[in-house]
Image (cartoon, rainbow, N blue to C red):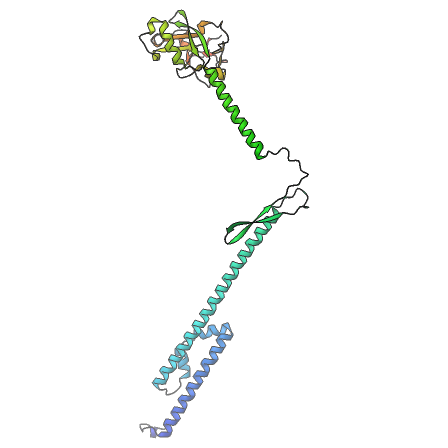
Length: 331
């Protein structure tokens, strides 16, 4: 356009040329977008390059010269719509590919577990007939994760000796026999505890006064001491707690019964503590002592060597010593 024509209104021919030029620019911009779209769908590198190019850059490159504002706006909207369609298509394809890979991995895991389980079942087979007998399979009605559980039923080799194995009937018979023996043992114990025996002893206060009392083998010591109070006037005023029973220098607690010593065969250096089958036993081995006398004379022999019964001590080998380690008394 020359300077002479500047400032004049455009003629009809100039307007037609301008419209033709704008139409050509729009066509070229559309072709460029279609080419870019096809290139982005064909190769990943071109798709990455297309994403880097902004809409404004495309408009700047394509809109050369004078362009109508409405056409420029339409061109921008078309480019933005095409870009959104490409992004949504790309996102859908990536999600479909990801879900496909996850489904494939889950299927592989299930197949791997199934194969391992099958190998474990195959390895656990045991045959006593060198593989000649095949295992039978029984499908359990119980469902595990929607699948039936297969149990293996193994056959027994008839040539193997199984006479040492007990059947349920034999085990039940053994249990009944043991229960019967247990009841018989308890019954026999009760019979022994009810047996009456005569115990010879002496009231000891520095002197030996003989005495005797009838007791049961199942009686406790305090029962015997309560009966001995009747034979000694000095013991009438006290209670059983004021009396002590000493057997071979061993103070027997009141809560023990005679049957305990008989059953466990408790011994001292002089022999069994209670042997009712020997009527000729020395009465000096069994002493009934008032506790007041013991408290006054416990530092004097023989009270100085008396000690309370301890079930963990073996009195048959016990050696009595004083505080300096010297042997005090040896039977």
